[in-house]
Image (cartoon, rainbow, N blue to C red; front, side, top):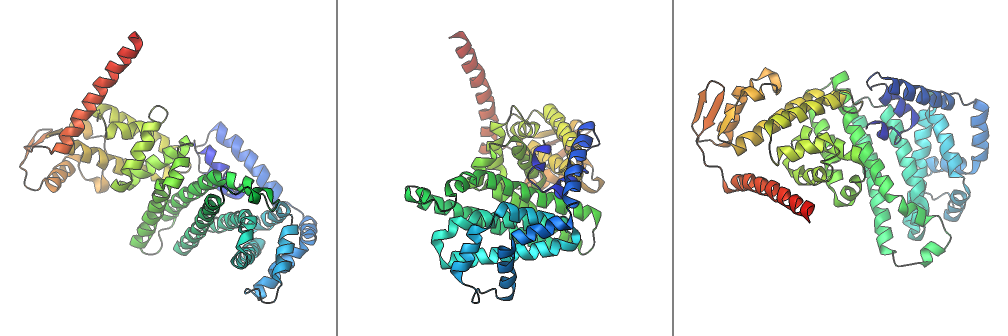
Length: 433
């Protein structure tokens, strides 16, 4: 599952991630391939880099001048446009890769990318008609800059920079879509021969999935950083962590992104697990929708469908154990194992007490709570917190509370049974016809 994600990141990032995977033959094979690619990139000769710089001298000189005169007053707009149009950007980005792989020249790479984005923005502000010509170059530049900053992730300030770059990429993609919608009926744009607009617009779903992957990686990376080095204020660290998680879930809940995530089962799986970790009710409807579509393929989707559907407790606990095993073995999610164990436990208990008036503690003993809190104590606390005036009775492993569940809860149980019965009847009818 997580192997599908690796292709979205540059080689050094891939190598860092794969080293976190469970030690298997498959992992060793992948790691060897990535290490070879990393070595090839790192061992580029200085003469080769110099040759690239000679071939790219026009654009590099333009960028150097921009550093001194960011407003563009000292350069001709037509000249900068001419140089950009004549530049082989495949070659340019190969050059950026070469100097990014070494720590000594990585700062230089970031400065070049930042200046290039400034040039593109300046041109766009002056002439909107050429917007689409530069979008692909700008988005690629931002992603490369993002990767360089990610590889130097050290503190909360780096996280802020990464979020800012991701927001810029998201805005750029959305502007592309607006441009697409406003010109969808115009054929002369596609026939003008300027740029490769049609190809770029076709890449919008891929760019969105790329962005979703990066948001998830950002959240995961910050959590790993939190575990490795808890310097600074813990509350600040936790707050930033939650911000990253919310940004990821908000992004995938956006209808324009949500329609694309359905095409990628591993993204659905990650989104579902992130939702369970967050316990945020506002994302429940979207995750439920995803889970319905993937209830046959994904354990996480089956867990959600069971939790908010039939609520078969024995099956639910088995599904939870399966997910915990899966998370432990996943290089992206392994650091969330403890968090998932607690959050999934809380969700099961909360739904359980909302559906029934009697709780059996024994089946719940495998659940994990924070700070070694006992399951029984937490169940009693949750009941009293949810139903403040209810009288709770404890007898051995049974906890009962005399309440009349609201119409919504009763309706949920009735509907679940009706749907199950109707499904069986419909299937029997179809088989006999």
